[in-house]
Length: 300
Image 1 (cartoon, rainbow, N blue to C red):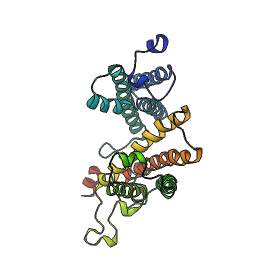
Image 2 (image 1 turned 90 degrees about the horizontal axis):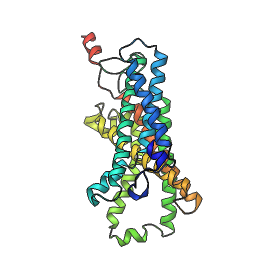
Image 3 (image 1 turned 180 degrees about the horizontal axis):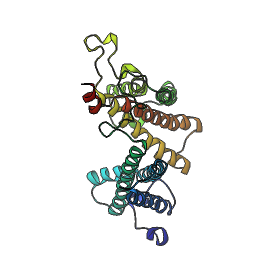
Image 4 (image 1 turned 30 degrees about the horizontal axis):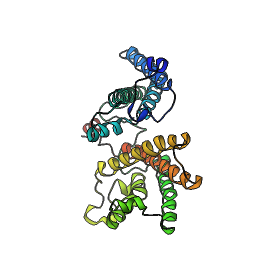
């Protein structure tokens, strides 16, 4: 609050966050404080489910807001490792690091409040009778919507790449000057294409959880959970944070120049791609939980 009133110290690259407004972090911090203190007061007490859900939403909003506002934290860490301490590094690291830590804490509290309100199983975290019990179950409709949203976002982004390639604008002069080989660029495009087609579909379709019939000896076996889920979360979070949060904010602020339609297809495509992956990954996470130990014991 003191920084909002009296002005903050010099920050790295002249900014604390991509988001403007001195009072925004104060508001987010106040929401986080209210959410955390309310959860602490409710801990160990008899609180109705509606109030628990309200606490979960409050902490989730505060946590997501703080994490988004503190998006520059990993960038500052990388800058510190490779470029050393510069003017504003300590202030930026303290502000964004504190925001990121507070955001993660709020999200953890939100998850705990939701589990108490939903009365999830203490052994596996499921809500038995409503949560999926095995990998073989069909993914919900919203998971398929997320997966195909990701494919649509990838298609929009690649339409700009195809246009640039046909027009001779790709690879760029800067890329060629850096000595990037054509092989490396081909590998990059192939991996990008897999992350925009195979990955989102694997997160939603059954063959992404259990090896399909044509896989031979692997048929019916479980696909390694974190091979698909970890990749989906990493790519989805990276695209959403970098393009959906930082990129879109920079575009709105006027920091990005260029023709409107290509920028819309590129920035919007990346954002939809990332959000779609995260939505589909949420379903994959639920469907691939290990069997409930309590249920296994009861069957025996």
